[in-house]
Image (cartoon, rainbow, N blue to C red; front, side, top):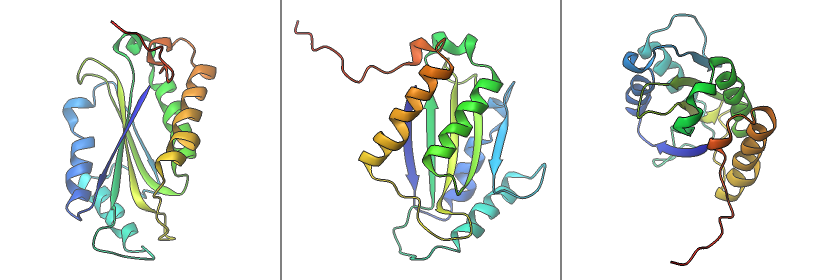
Length: 174
């Protein structure tokens, strides 16, 4: 799997990014997982307000704080037939556990976009009600999230072999 991360630093991002992730055109045969979001059948606006409310707990507010992270877990198109919602939920839960277990989170699966299955994961910039930033260094991201996620995938879902990443490709000279 490929993991990509994008950060957002503006308050308007709460609404626009939640709207983007929850767009209905991509929700066919999908699911939505939430963590620390209260209520059922909430509108996008109500979810955005909960992300914003959690941001108000930030311990060290600065002008340039990251308010939201959108992280995308992409899988090879050849593995799409093996990616059930149950497997995707297990992968999402493991990712949340490794990346930021105390962050407000929203997860959706997108199956009809760009001919490959991928998960969109929204994380608040701070832990739930503590205000502590969830920022992570590149090295920590690689060693504490990315590599363990790939090992988790290999161990629990070996049938997703096309989505495995080769971190040490042989150098071929042409």
